[in-house]
Image (cartoon, rainbow, N blue to C red):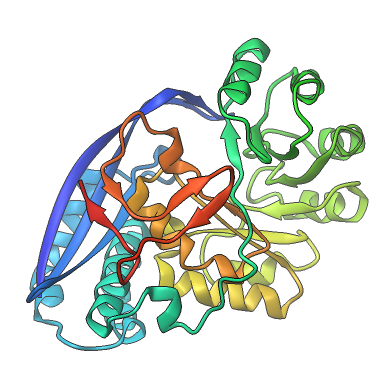
Length: 336
């Protein structure tokens, strides 16, 4: 098996701002695993909050190239078990690798990945579309540029309620709010009451990730469901979220890929938590991998490729929130 690493700098349509940062370009690593006539693709993007860069990921993968390329014909679960000890310090790199191997494995079996897992796609949820922080006028303009049934609105400013109040005047769409750790306990409880009246479905990660006492307080008193993001990174975090959150948002790049991501979602379901998968502004490579998990989800945020000025791959397509799969096997990805 051959390991091929490709570095990209994905240009965004608009400056993308959350409570922590603003970006115009998203560095991304594409991992290709090639075996005879088959190739599988995976992706992980850089992220300063998690101190991860493409250069670090590439260096970590090069160190174990000899191990990766010696592997032949094992299951994705065994592949993950074998590679995890070498990359447990770099889950982003592990994600891209695990994603690529799952894709390759399914292609070699002549099936789409969700078919290999025996998932039914009859009740797949629709994806939201993200509106990053900007002036109220610019946020309204972004929303009007792309009419959508569900919007995820990034907040964490002093004008949060005013923003949502104004956006509500221009659409009847469902709103989801992501404060990216930008609120206090009191702000969250107070804002939840106001936002519920404005047609908001849930709040995502309003408090700092390690504020577990605060999460517990919000869980008890919030008028809206609370979904964990930064507080739910790896498999062990799912059970911690019980009685602190109403659901979890699993990010594949943070947990190490599709293999642990599936386990996290299954564990969350057992605990009665709502399930969601989010993206990290990936191209269609990463988004097509997320699509394989749709049958396990209550909610999904997989609009990353829609935020790009130019994509680097074809795969799943999205139209007014509805996801359609590629005809190809695996995750259905082809690099452009």
